[in-house]
Length: 399
Image (cartoon, rainbow, N blue to C red; front, side, top):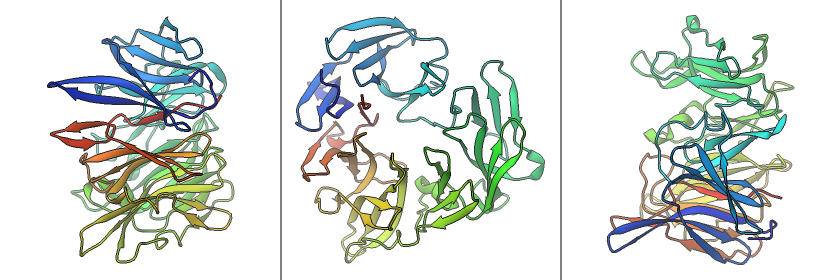
């Protein structure tokens, strides 16, 4: 771990012995398969990567943190910077992983966000604004607050009788955001599935910089702020049993044109199975491909098949690095994450999947994409059954 170059996977591991539960922080060297475990301090509420050479714990009172230097193994007790915990609300699971969000315009300024329950749409690109959607009011109105003054600088127009359904800040512009609104299914439902519209808005002027009318649900900006990937409206309600089976589309904010990846839903379906859903879409770091999870079902055997796949935007080629594995076949894949160097894939294969809201039996796994070597482990047991990590996994940042 002293060498900052190897990809290290960090996660919480729970172990039960003699009726008691112990929690440790586990580090896995993806290249060698070596493990290192560190008991959680009794007063630790959260854990996080600070950079490639440091990881840390946050105390229960959220006032101090212990930052460990991996080159020396020594820890230093430091105060938590003012404002760094503004986005940590609620109780959640503890200890729990945090994501450290650095403000591009001020590298020394950072905020913590939950890995498991985080919403990167809360904080604008340079940390000057926060956004909140109020789901307790009809219309799900969004309000945007300037952090320095506490002043609300933008609110949804509730007079148009449209319900807000999605919100996301541009990742490169502190005063640009995307919002989706539409009409509920009926007067008794808050499911926004009709007359959906995506707008990209300039916060300062209120000008609509780009807009699109389509069947729009989940949205995801590309890291350069040029494109938005979106699924249909039912994709927002996957845990209620709705399954997105259509083609995801990409909206170019500059040209205001869209392209839909229509070959994706029918690709790589195993013989005897049907597509249940695709989901968990992410952009690759170089923006040359789209990653996603695919789930298939066999009517006769009632078996599931889960895969993580990659769609190359240049030629439409689809590869599924998990397709040859026996482990996720029979279960679905509930979550995944590629290492920053794109050489390894960590994922949870589970009895449950993204079309339900319960945590089923599951195992964590690590796949070496070059050799096909697979490491699997049981994170903890519940009622004697294996479980994946609730707090997800965290890859060490690149140096």
